[in-house]
Image 1 (cartoon, rainbow, N blue to C red):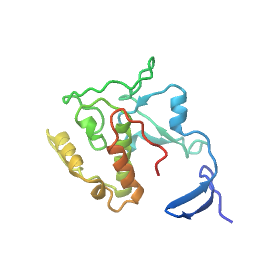
Image 2: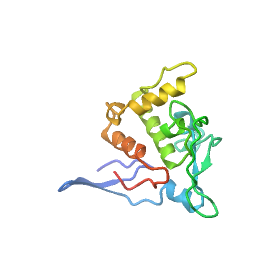
Image 3: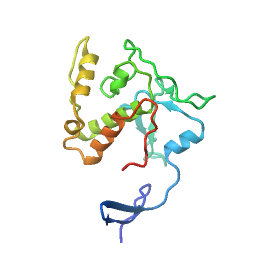
Amino acid sequence: MPIHTPRIPRVHYKGQQGDFYILVMDMLGPSFWDVWNSFGQSFVHGDVKPENFLHGQPGSVDEKKLYLIDLGLASKWKESTSSQHVEYDQRPDIFRGTIRYASVHAHLGRTASRRDDLESLAYTLIFLIKGRLPWQGYQGDNKSFLVRKKKMATSPELMCCLCPAPFKHFLEAVTNLKFDEEPNNSKS
C-alpha cells in the first residue's frame, strides 16, 4: 500500500495507452492561477528568483507553504476596466528585474507580460537543479548586455542538459510565448 504524503495528491494509476502516458491522481481544486484571476488580479511579478520564495514561519502550520514576496516591480498585464491585455511597448534604456533571472524581453526593455515571469521561473528552477546558469560570472558596465547575449545564444538543449526533460519543454514553451499569449497550463 503506497504511503500518502500530505499536500501531494495520491496517484491511483500510471501507465501508457498507445502513444499517450496516463496519470490518474486525486482531483484537486483550482490552481493558484485560477484563484488569482477569479479575484481580478492580473499582475506580473517582475522579479521571480530564488530569493523571493520563502517558507512559512518554522514550527508553524505554514512552515511547508511557499510564499512569493517582493512585489516592488509588479505591474499589471491586464487592464482592470476593459480586461484587455496591456499594450506592448519597448524602451531599451529601461531594465526591470534581476539580471541573472530576467527574461530576454526584460533585457530588451519590453513591457512585462506573463511570459516574462514564466521565463524567470524557468531560469530559477534550472539554477536550483544545476547550481549555476551559463551567464553567471560576467562583470563590469556591460554585464547586462553580455548576459542577454548569452541567454539568447544558449539553446534549451544546452541550458537544460543534466535536467529532467520537462524542464527543457517548459523553457521552450515559455520562451516561445507571444507578448499577449495566454500560457497553456494543460501542456505536460
